[in-house]
Length: 216
Image 1 (cartoon, rainbow, N blue to C red):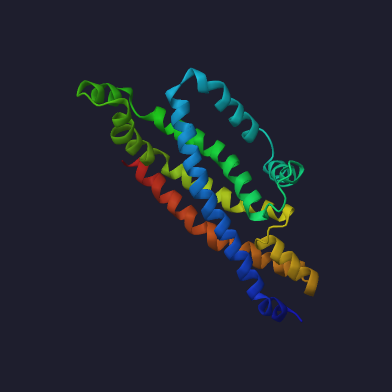
Image 2 (cartoon, rainbow, N blue to C red):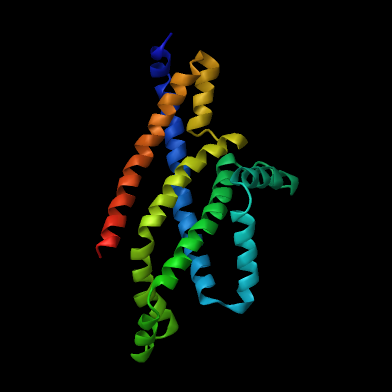
């Protein structure tokens, strides 16, 4: 059958590509939102939230993503939440995991803004919310964009772990093709090329942002 079998299975690979892209985009949106909130709260150093946020970070940064994904998927059934879709389980696990990592990027970015910026904003009568909204966060986003894009590249590759709970992303669809026609090397070369097509443009963006930040 040769490469013709892979060509004939291009529709299956395209489905996997769409599923991977959907999971990646949804996680980028939710994980960034969660990371921003946690990062801002950690930078604010609110005593009552210090311990809960620290526990969240230690749990999700300190344990394998695959274990978290399996725990959420099978744990939901154990708790009586029947019929949880693999997409939802993968999305929740990835969001919590990536949110923990992204929160540290935002926290570092917020703390990198010179302290004098806050003092100057207070001197002209801005409230704490206005200082964060109009002074600190715009500068923070400029600082964190390069590492954020780098984190997103890793996130896209992490979606491959969702195959362990049955989500039909690229790797699982590729495995289905291998089960039908064989040729594992050729199939995984094609899958690797698809990941490259997704991630390489993002890496170029990250490099450009890094250069711009260095010359700013």
